[in-house]
Length: 556
Image (tube, rainbow, N blue to C red; front, top):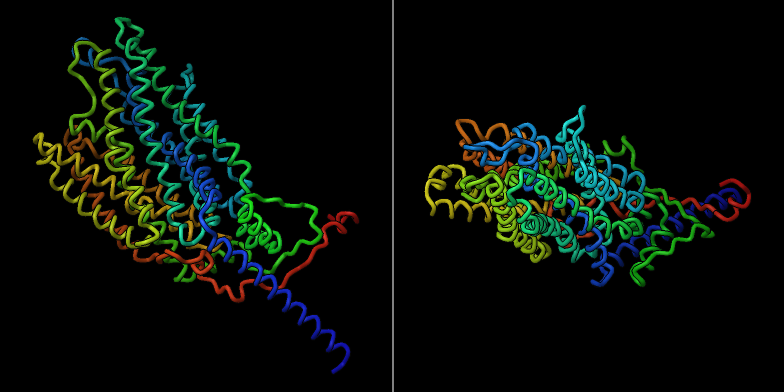
């Protein structure tokens, strides 16, 4: 063998050894994360991510109560002798409720992409800042000669929605990438369950605020509406408190080792991060490290994205996660953002039989606050924890299939039996029970699992992007539901079409069931096995950069 051949052979051997070493280090680091014992590290991740969802849900669902008060403040009383509080027009009410959904859709797509492109750490916290700014804008919104109060609120609700949208992919992928595989489902369900507590908190804060302002609202004073105006601003503004508390932790959360290794392609740093995180719960990234190793690995690009998801085995999963989320949110937000309509239908809504407008307004807001608390406690919160208890035992797919199947049956009963149910007191009680049951099986079912699965089944370089696409599809369903509910519910008379809307919801639940058949079961599997990519040859050759030397020579 010639000297040149020996040199080539030696170089090839060195490269192969480098590849094997890098690949082994990556696999070892990921295995440590996947098999890590449960501890304070995981609790901290859940708390930091969960506070965002608490804030999101509070901001989303507090508008149900706030919109009622806004109508009273900015519209003249009606009824005999002006004893019934005014109300926003259908378009005004729709605008302030749907604005956040439109913003959320944009936020999910944009932040989903940026978290893969720029990094989870660099984007995390920015979305919370946007939520804080948007919430403050709504709370202090005012009218001017050139713009109505509704226009200002809609604008700030859109801004708030962009931040809320960013929280979905970021919190999902950060939680999944830090979690051990045997408890990953429970951790993600725990994060998402904060949504139920945010919903409940909105009702509790509204109840406390209206009771605190009771005397000034009921006072024999023509300026009673000032207290009502203060009421809704307090309720909305309180949504900033948990966001401000969590902001520091969001901004200082470390980058996930999976992103460092698979997207930044820095195997050495990612492996060191994983070891240190599991040992101490912290990271200590040294920018002056002597050696930075950039491994040759699949790199995100439009061409690679099309190639990956152009394969049916991958494309069907993205379609399944996106469409099942779309179908679920048609019903979830169609009901959730119109709970006042449901409460009115069952006799727990606006109060109009008082002797004066102040009494009617106070009692209507009180009823709405208590009604939302009942709905949250009666179905939303228990459903989240049923999922958290069983998701790593039963699996995600069986829970999602079960949820869609039961919801199909519930909405069929509610829709086709609507007229008979609301015709008697006993029927109304049955309707309330079915409504709470629907809330329960939305959360003990697809509302939680549609959040979990997209955070697990895609490669690291597209995990946040694909989760954002799936979540945005869901938010499109929410927009369709909101606009459709608003435009259809009064066909044939006030709330006369609600029964048929519930029948439409049943159809979407059935479609969600079939879409779920396209997604894989993710219970107990590593994120790398779920990516549908061969891990044996995932890491190619590596390029070594001697950072200190290059910096000293001015080349970096």
